[in-house]
Image (cartoon, rainbow, N blue to C red; front, top):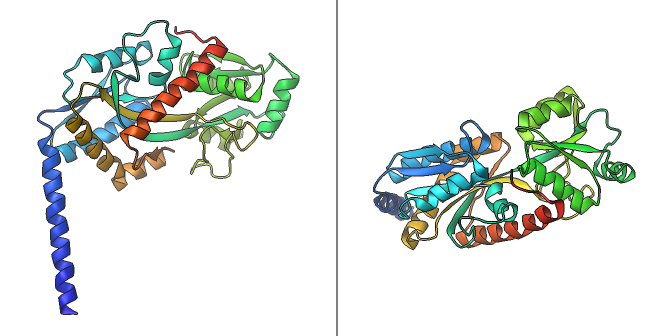
Length: 326
């Protein structure tokens, strides 16, 4: 018994030593502050994710982490800034849907989304919701599709703007459900939500957190979630795919990419640091409270395949819908 106890204590000591050595080895890779370039203004969901990640990374790499907000041109400004920075792993980019949609929206691009950036890993993913005005006489996705098919060009859906995630969800819904619904763009998600609640439009796509108060008040009805699996905050609500539109999936995601010229050892160090950051209980819990899920175990290869697939997927939707950059 005493021998087993000694072995156990020794094993714990060895683990602690190895863990400390790994932590110091990781810190040695970073020689100055790390900059996370975010293609959105401060205060939004992606900005919050970046700051949450930055706080934990500061602890792990032993260097300050600066969140650099560079909104504009659907992320092109931030993307170009990332590529112009020294490719040494100390400037990283928080990519999201616009990153994979831009190649289809624009006739010319200043870079190649797939070739000029190296994927590190996805950080988080959260579902959107398909919501309708309380007065719309439908109870589920199938009834909505049937109504839209019976009234082509009469059902309106709002979005946070042309080529926004909510707009893309609507266009994907049109393609897969075979319906003719009319897009009404607004200058942001808040005005679109006000218009939907007020009955100016009858359906829309929004994030779960923004949807909850309107569901509780009875002003909106939720028919489905946009993700491949159900939301932990709305477990009783089916996915749009299982509710009647097979193949539908569009999540609100974020992930880290760097210049493809970044040395492989630094790419590996970044992957390790970000993996350890999002595995931290406080990070996972905060993301969960916001309706998001941390991407645990995502590899650069998996993330790269995801980016390539998303570029292809949204390219088809953009071309079919005739969406143009504004």
